[in-house]
Amino acid sequence: MTYNGCKFTYNALTIENGKFEGSADITCPETGAIEIAAPSCTITIPAQQNLKKLTYTNTASGKDRDITVDLNITGLIYLEDKTAPLFKCVDAGKTKTNGTIAGGVVLAAEKEGKSIGFWVE
Image 1 (tube, rainbow, N blue to C red):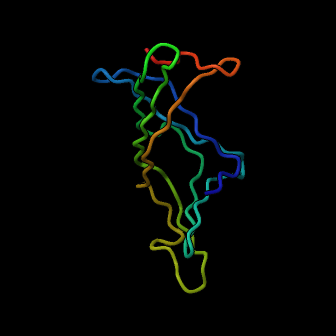
Image 2 (cartoon, rainbow, N blue to C red):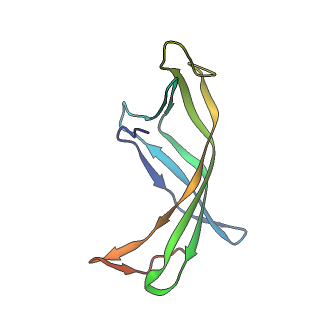
């Protein structure tokens, strides 16, 4: 995966059914996009906003508190592009809107090399 200067930004939270939820943006330089290369196909993901949904969960306690962010993004816009002479993407040249990103990340905070509590409320 090549980010080409693109970055993910996690957005403000809302409380839904007792859980902290939010969205993400993919921001890129004017000519940038995220590229995922496979032997016969390249997927290009352009800048886009308000991708839903992220769930934020406080974990641990005290100075060891951190936040787990679970990503369950749907509706991601992407383009399939042929890259190999003998094979091609299933939908080469077509922009699609059914991409997904699933996974998680842990956000933690430090001050002067020491863990400090970090949470959402």
